[in-house]
Length: 116
Image (cartoon, rainbow, N blue to C red; front, top):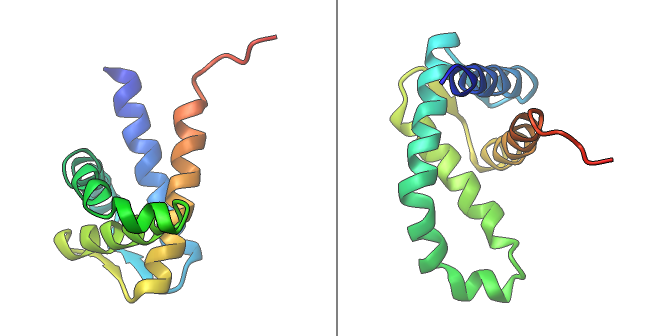
């Protein structure tokens, strides 16, 4: 439980970092970032799988690159739902979603031991 809360805080800090370095993305504060990461998690659990199935033909044609578009749209949708979190266009949403995905991979893999 404590590990999950720690990761949630790390995700919020990652989102604040992304808002700091990418013009066009802004977050009002730390609690807004916590709420936004919660909403991102809920969207990734419930809406993202439906979007992936519905866009499967175009995803196959683009060799999976359309997944980047889906991630950007869901990132912008999160900003639409969370007051105090704004994304001013598609390009900041695309860059922000890519960076958030990279940071999420780093955060999720940080607790695992590397085999020798």
